[in-house]
Image 1 (cartoon, rainbow, N blue to C red):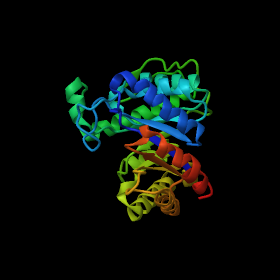
Image 2 (image 1 turned 90 degrees about the vertical axis):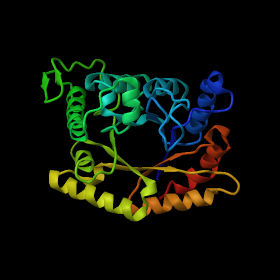
Image 3 (image 1 turned 45 degrees about the horizontal axis):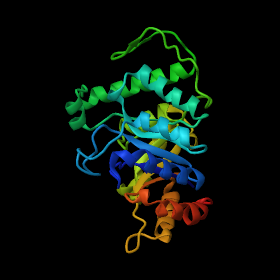
Image 4 (image 1 turned 120 degrees about the vertical axis):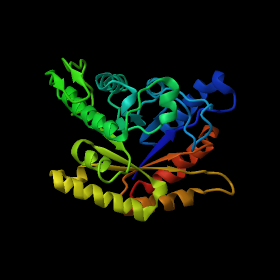
Length: 293
C-alpha cells in the first residue's frame, strides 16, 4: 500500500509569516520519510468541514509549485481541482508545467466542483450540476488530446479551442495520471472508468460502502471495455496521531481494512501534521508496516 499526505490546513503557529517554513518542514519530512504523494486542496476559502471560510487558505497550484522545489520524490497533486475554476487548456498547461519542473511527479486531480460559497464570493460562474459534469467530461477529453500531441481544434458544447498546443509535453508518460475525485455512481465513476488513471473516495464512508463503490466502478469498466486493474484506487482519511487519540497501530489497522476492500493508495490528513512528530511516526512505523498490504 502507498501512503499519501494531504495538507488541507494552513492556520499554524507563527501565522502567514512562518507559513512557508512550516510547509517546507512538513513537505521535507514527508518526502524523506517515504510518503508516496503530497496533496493540497484546490479551494480558495477554507471548506466548512475543516474550519471557517476565513481560515488561511493557499491557492493550490502555487503551493504545489513551491513544494516541488523543496522535495525530490513525492508525487504532487490537488485533491481535487473543481473543473469550473480554470479554463481546460490552462489547467492542462498548469499541470504539465508542474510535471516538467518537478521531474515528472504530477497528478491531475479533478472533479465536478461543489463549493458554491467560494465561487459566489470570488465571482466564479457556478452552473448547475448537469453542466458541471458536461464541462468535466469535455475537460478530460481536452487533457487527453493535448497530452497526445494532437493540436487539432476541439469543438465541444461548452469549450472551443482552436489549437491544442502544449509545449513542452509532460515528462510523465504517456501523461500525468488523471485522478477523479468523487463517488457518484452514475456520472463520476463512469468518467473514472472512461478517462481516469485513478479514483479518490472518502474513507469516512466506511468499508462496506467503499467496497460497493469499487464494485460499481468495476461494472463501469466492464461496460466501456476498460481494465479495472489499470485504475489506481485511492481513499482520503483523517487521522489524529496523539496520546489519547489514535496510535500507529490504529492507523495500520485502518490501512489493512482499506487494503482488504481494494484501496491501494491511502491518503491521510492530520490537523497536527505541522508538529512533525506525527509524520515521523508514519515514516518510522506505519509506512514500513503497510508496504506489503
